[in-house]
Image (cartoon, rainbow, N blue to C red; front, side, top):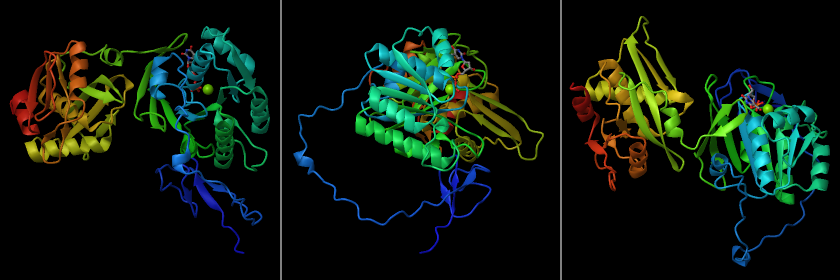
Length: 451
Ligand code: TYD
Ligand code: MG
């Protein structure tokens, strides 16, 4: 039998490679490939015969799994309405972003609703977790604490205690004695996650795994277990900003792309039930280079401010710096402005930023980005009571986007009185907003900037 060749696994995204290379083909990260011991072939035995059931024989009276709500609305919405029994959830995020804080608060909330909850920390001693709980005002919450990293022991404990929900903080600290590599390696993290997810399904326990996003190659990142779990949430935020966004990127039991917004305060995470007001709160009105985008995040409209700065460049290749939107999208918008409207950005540095540390991925933001760019370039402010949305096609046409009604309603609620949007948008009642519908970018440039 041929000897199994070693393989190299990317510790950031889990892609496997035949030979070592400096850069991962899967995610483009540098120096993240680590050698993984080949799987032993094991004894060749035929598997035992399983059983299949015709779909039609499944009892129809079995109700869909009832969800347990925590009462933290921002969390429940991201989970798709609450915690599904026997589900496995991954919560990823940068170290220090507030994952442990969020989950301790969530655990206490679920425990308050009658779920039996265990919080297992592999990073902090129980006393430290208790201190944090005290700081959060949760010292009296009926939550079981454990400080343990040996997964075998944890599983035995869980088997005996039979909780409804268990938090594993973090999956990178867990280790299994059957796997030879070090804790935190791709093999350990995968094996530990597999054990926990299997346990969740078999015993009907919900499991939340915490995973640190890592920059170094030796510790596996949360992406290597994304495919094993039912729900993947990322906890994001900019350093220096208090806002934290919990974003669902995969959810078997609810909509993906839903967000929950929190604010990190001196005593834990506070829920932000009106994110639009928060993101627009420190807006300087009537400054050139600012445009308000009426966006949709999951099921909820969220207004954000897009800021642009355009300045003569001393460099041969001018800078294109973006925070919060896709840089490819910016290039496309700049190219369309140049080719279709005759407005060049060559020789100019361009900076685009979404205020408040928010990340916008909807194509509907195109028009607001173009608006901010033009406003900065022409030094003409966009009316402060105007929101913009619409997708820009390569031809320069403006394409209608979904949920026009919801976007306008939210804008109106926050005191905006006019909107620029693509013509042919599906309108309901326009909520007393003055609508400026435009067919293409040229019309937009003409009307707004008189070019
Ligand atoms: P933590 O939950 O430990 O982050 P993670 O588990 O993602 O590594 O949060 C750490 C940061 O949060 C730390 O810098 C302190 C800050 N923090 C507050 O600002 N207020 C609080 O009430 C708590 C508990 C933490
Ligand atoms: Mg932590």
